[in-house]
Image (cartoon, rainbow, N blue to C red; front, side, top):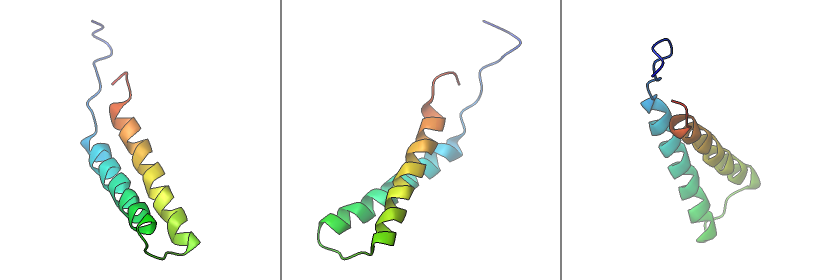
Length: 65
């Protein structure tokens, strides 16, 4: 084990925000496919939430921490 580079602690804020963003975006997409009428802008925002959530989850689970 290398003493100069201790393992980094995981940032649990990334986990919480990633799950929240992914969940909210997925919920919006799910309701759209079940018949709710949304504008195109709202769908783009929902896809953006899913993308940001995936990035935050990747930051939490990436190897090397």
